[in-house]
Length: 81
Image (tube, one colour):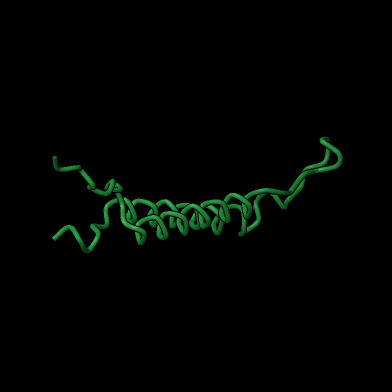
C-alpha cells in the first residue's frame, strides 16, 4: 500500500507572509502616529488635533500599509508559474 506523504501546502509562501507582516507593522505605526493630543481641560480647544502628523502623515502611512498588505495577498509565489 502506498501512503500519502504529501506535505500540506500553505496558501501563501514565506515571502508573502513577511510582506504581510511588514504591512501590518506600517498600519500600526500609522495609528500610533494618529494617537495623542489629549486635552486636560475639555473647555479649552487644543490645536494639536490639527497637526500635520495627525491630519496628513498618519493617514498616508495607514494607506501605504494597506497597499503593502494588498500587494502581499496578490503577489504570486515563485513556485506558481
